[in-house]
View 1 (cartoon, rainbow, N blue to C red):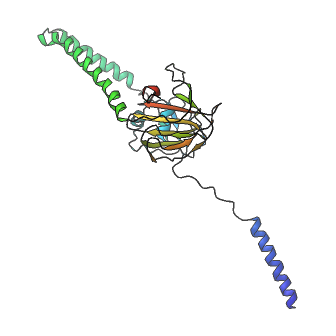
View 2: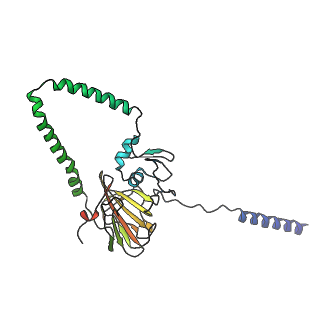
Length: 275
């Protein structure tokens, strides 16, 4: 009787053990905090974009060749520019249906105003052309000032060792950066002090990409990496290794390096020290 009981108990234990092994939970994949988890490419359609999981406003603005502050203002988004999946982002300001009516009313008022003004000839009116010329001259001077001011504040450094095989082109469809060729795994370094505002692969044609913000006007981008070694919101120092060179979304192993000034690509050679 005891033997029979032990035999039954052993059999039940074996069955339970088998069931447990067959239904053991699958391993959980750990996600790296701060790294974009977006798998869909950013594709802007009709000057608007629907946010996917892992997107950042910096990446969307970068893809549209826009200053992130401009896109944020259009959409009423304040710093630190938080967005959420499903949110509709406008790249250009939506057209106002009453715009035509407002323009007509404004023009009519202006016309009436100028008719009254033209009936009087005074010394003040004769001096206006000189005033306008002065304002335009000084306004132009002030618009040029920020570029020189901010470029001096950023200490630029070559992001990788290698041969420059593509140069910046100002043509509409030209190459908007430098292509620096080396072997896979070669270190990619931060070209200046900054903060990581994007780390992922959602931008079409850039592969594994890192975007750094250096100040309110300057960004730098590092594309086609094999490995990313920084996460979003991480602060980095000039010369710090941030990735390893690769060929993601590219036909050869090389780093695509860009500098953006207020959303527009500029020639990195004008900012980097001579070799």
